[in-house]
Length: 341
Image (cartoon, rainbow, N blue to C red; front, side):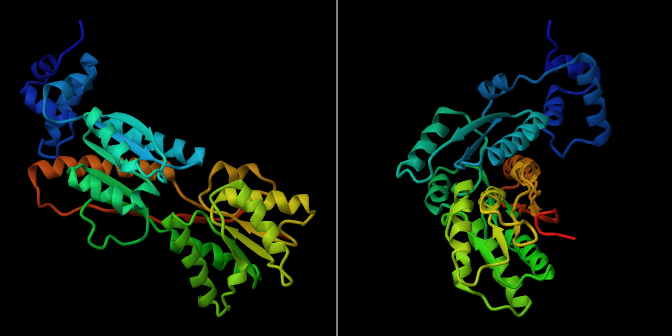
């Protein structure tokens, strides 16, 4: 027979409510009690029944990851990060992709919420930046955490995990300037993503910091796609005064630019330096490998799930408790695509 929560309680010499508190990682339990209960759980090989917990109580033990992103590497990293935290904390995970440009996207998300007994939702861009979606969730009093581009909380009423894209993009551009480049092209990601705006601001800040004039002709509209990099290279290479470096708003864009450069027999990095952003597998599968900013998407997602679960638990006992925010700053990774001997 499978061990029950009462079996764990008897072996540990505590009440089954205490065992429940330990399983839910509530901070009110003494460390020595946590150790006793965990030893009993291990000895009995007890597995919490999350389905029974959902049916038996008013608390839900499932999170949903709601996203719209065409980048498979990004989505898989996010899913893995959230799933790892859910497993550690005894939660289930529901994956819900959707189309953020659909006029009925909010209704779709609400329908999913009503069908599932959820404790909360993890939102990544662009959904995490859509005020109509946030307002709809607030109206239903849904718990959620936002993963967004930025560096400060402002007056956020729900927890956020910030990614300081601006500072990281400034570091990449500064690196290119230090390599001797004065005309640096910038290929944008989707206009609907705040990360595009923040990375462009970082690029502009680095130019200003080094006393270089911003040239709007060097900035090309695009999307977070390989094709945008190919097309961006064509646009920039057609200029009379061509750039000697290109900064792609993500690694997929930079990979497309590198592909187009090699097709046109442009030597990278001797004739043209190319940098990306995120440190996705794209950055390591090219030749030469791409200089980029390492954005740990799995850790960002895991932190988002942890922050959300902590927020939900704290809200039950301290409704007016301060909101906890986290921040990540992607680190510069210099590779062969921007350096030559």
